[in-house]
Length: 271
Image 1 (tube, rainbow, N blue to C red):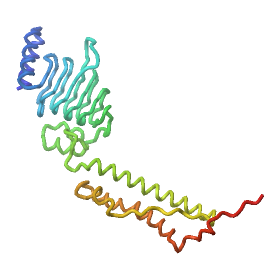
Image 2 (image 1 turned 45 degrees about the horizontal axis):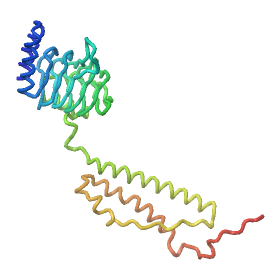
Image 3 (image 1 turned 180 degrees about the vertical axis):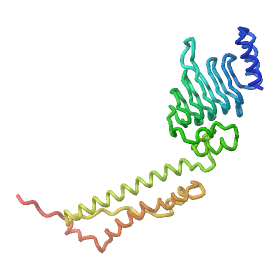
Image 4 (image 1 turned 90 degrees about the horizontal axis):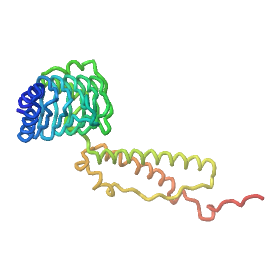
């Protein structure tokens, strides 16, 4: 429906019946929630999925077999006359909420990730994500397959590129669990470094003794590292690493290995 109404409005716009074209585009926006300027050029087999909030500017050019998801904006960054909006090549897929702003070209077969903000040219076959948009994957030898109109093949190519139109995949890990994993890895690395430093100090000074460390118990982390809550069973395994490192340090500081109080006094300095 919006594509058909736009094509009628675009025909009127080219015939210099701009007031009538804008009236038709305004009616289309009221009816569908999709705003396409009648001056925009749209290619064949253009598809908008859940189109509410899609905005396409006057000088935008959209190629064939392009797919847009909800909330996409093809906008400009200035009020200058002439080309102000982006050009999308054939087979481009733009994820939900993405903003493509400026008079540049998004190459054929490119993928724009969900909520990305793109202000620079995108080479063909590339995948862009983030704010500001950054290229995470370059063109692939199979990029021609991405231009195929077969939905199953296009979906397979998207999965190969690691692209997801809605920014969320079924196997995406819990970000909280990922952060905890990184923290535990860092703690383990710090513990190992401190242990090496203490070992060096013990070799340099026979009178040096490590201080006693507080014990870490598994039950202290039961609520935080619940496998069902985090969805990452590896976290439980990593959580034991700092405890094992510290327990090894404690084993060297047991009462049997600790010197008597009078032996802890440093020898007097000469001179």
